[in-house]
Amino acid sequence: MNTSNYIIRNANPSEFEEIGKLLISVYSQLEGFPKENEQPNYYKMLANIGDFTNFPETELLVATDNNDNILGAVVYFNDMQYYGSGGIATQQQNSAGFRLLGVDLKERGKGIGKILTEECIKKATFNKRKQLIIHSTLAMQTAWKMYENLGFKRSEDLDFMQGELPVFGFRFQFTS
Image (cartoon, rainbow, N blue to C red; front, side, top):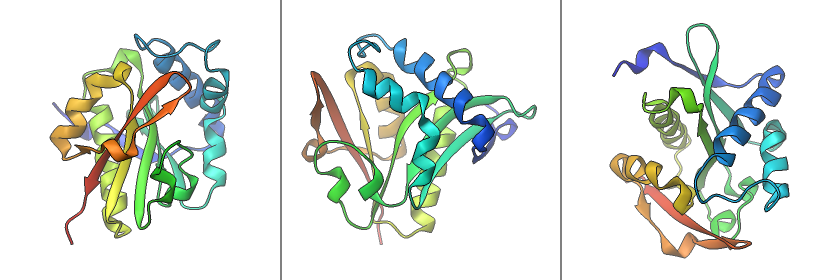
């Protein structure tokens, strides 16, 4: 697969609304994932995805093609206090994380999620973080294998409940 046709960069504020719509489309179609009427605040957060960029050391990354079409996005947190999850993740020191990874349904299977994840690993490495933390749900299990192949390990201590939804933690440990 040729992933050199994709550009990973910070999203422009003019793209925030489009990215929010893309993520709502992706998450609302996941089998077994809560619908908008079940978790309205979660979908409101997706719609306003650009708000995360108001936090220090937080970036909204996009994958685009050569025509600047947005194919996927992820929010990278270089400081876990802004990560905004339940459980203990936000108290993790010297750690980075990413959330809300989504790839356009028409672009699945092309390695876009993987290159967005690898960009987050690069950023955490560059910033000398000791670990990279992520969360996922059973509805997103197709991504688990990709994360594990990249070196993430399940970390039950990071698990939490988001309402009725179990959320599962993963860590990528950097060796010093």
